[in-house]
Length: 145
Length: 116
Image (cartoon, rainbow over all chains, first blue to last red; front, side, top):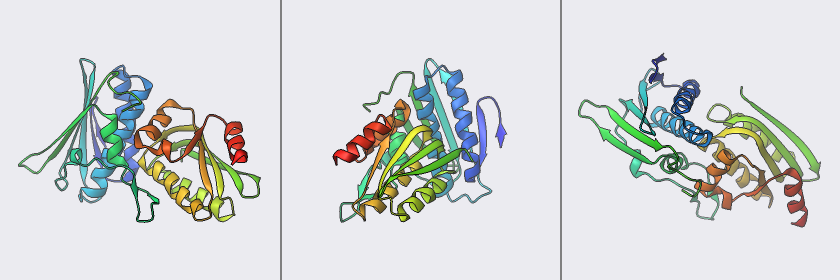
């Protein structure tokens, strides 16, 4: 793991997700976000990190970068990875039921992300880098979202 | 591991699971196993106390959904105790607050169970 004040490099492997979460929570706290927003951003960071590790097909030696910043009451996270192209912003997820009406596990990670950030965008650069930007504004999201 | 799971039998078929810590990608498989074992022991109506839970992600939610599926095979139920606003928010926005009955205290959850 390489870490500077506002950037962290995470090696693929579940053991590193907690470091990512703590890095984001620490920076969100410094940004002055309340406990609810810090929890939201921690969940978002872990869900995105987990997705990159699980579906990015980068292998255990793969790495991705996360850069955070706080400007004008807006906290941003930028994930950069070289995994397979995938635009998660178009995948809303949600509760799913089998043919007998039983609730199924899974499908909630990206739904949580979508509901817990104010805005997120995805770009695939020609040099093979996925860039996912997520933003949360202080006081911008309520429980009703 | 930043998780502690305690299981208590209240009466035949009814038990309480107290979870303390963070339910995330590291700990969820352990929580899943602990609850599955409790169900296997015949506790098909379970109250899961999340008052000591500081963090839950989608893998944690998946564990609760999986437990619900298992007890439903025996016409059982899973209800939750949760007052932490951050955790409740996760249940609200995913729609799981409509799937699980969520109570403010153990007394309230037990009373609701007795009322059927």
